[in-house]
Amino acid sequence: MQRFLIKETAKHIGEKVRVCGWVNTYRAHGKILFIDLRDISGVLQVVFVPSNKEAYELAQKLRTEWVVEIIGQIVKRPENMVNAKIDTGLIEMSVESLKVLSESETLPLSIEGDGYEINEEVRMKYRYLDLRRERLKNNLIMRHKVMKLVREFLDKEGFAEIETPILTKSTPEGARDYIVPSRQEPGKFYALPQSPQQYKQLLMTAGFEKYFQFAKCLRDEDPRGDRQPEFTQLDLEMSFVSQEDVMELIERLLILTIQNLFPNKKIQEIPFPRIDYKDAMAKYKTDRPDIRNDKNDKNILAFCWVVNFPFFEKTDEGGWTFTHNPFSAARPEFEDDLMNKKNIGDILTTQYDVVLNGFEIGGGSIRNHKPEALEKVFEIMGYGKEIIYDKFGHMMDAFKHGTPPHGGIAWGFDRVMTLLLGEPNIREVMAFPKTGDGRDLMMNAPSEVDKKQLKDLHINIVKETKK
Ligand code: ASP
Image (cartoon, helix red, strand yellow):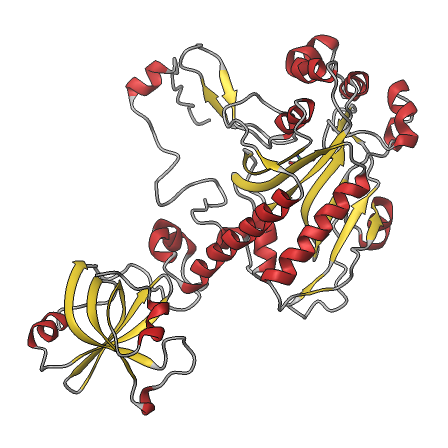
């Protein structure tokens, strides 16, 4: 017999159907037993009466969160039991047979309600139970819907989703790399990508013109604020475009996403206002200003662009480093200064950041596609020719073989979802997040590995003695 999803059962009054799911609640009214059965699609009231002896006796053993299969007839509820709040509130199931598929011990945490008050370490340890919570289920399903909309939109715009490697070489993106030892080449390491920046630019050299990817990015940063060691970017890159083209596309995509999937939200201003970095710093003292007119309204989305960032900033050691991305181009009026390494602190970059309610949700730039310009950036950062070619030889070579002008952007996808769903932190929109200090409490990672694995990797653990 075919299985029905609970949400479909309301259309089958009078019919016999088979449903499967979890015992959500269990209660007795006099001699009659009721359970609310839950599956991914909804909740159904199921009624056991003593006259069906076999099912009734088994039903008495049921406990919440047991997994069961039930065959029965869908009938209208008595009028005094109608629940207008749920799709299946007009109906119930009169049971013919019951089968227990799996039993459950008492859960170590409550999955009723939104769960914010429960100790987060417990929620993370039993994440597979925490995810049974309606709020988290909804968050992950909305995340899926946004991804789907984005994919369809970009596909129509002529983008191809292309995967790039996870085992790669270190990229200078401002954070520490996670590294992976090579078994075959003792003493050598891969790095996990901080972003697909170099690969996406090389895909432009390859001629794909429009690339995107929901990409996992890994950064070994010290615990600070609401960060995760691994997170998802919506990453994209386009050839033959101006800064305006990228910004226009992203603005259109964000508006479409909100109008289609978050109709209760109101975008404060369209087109998104643009603010110069120096004006933002003067007026708001931050480069991610919260420009909401009414900060109490939880449905207001105040987007803005921040542009005209300085390209370089001083390092603690007195040298120069990039503010955002070493692969960015200078704004055209500063190209000469870049090539002559003059007025370095005044050079502005083509970087554009998109900010929502005071959070940076994305950033990108038009890139240097000429090898001489990229080389100048690295020289300003104090790299000698040898290092430049050792670390970025592949980029320099690529740029000598017909690379189109290009630019792109990446959204912090978890952050976008957090803000759209009105959640307090990014862990609430991730299936299996880690703690602030990078631990996975459910899998118990990081963890020790056995001696044989270490030997294969030519690794010796030296225990530091505490001073
Ligand atoms: N790779 C950049 C980042 O991760 C985004 C970009 O410039 O496209 O911030």
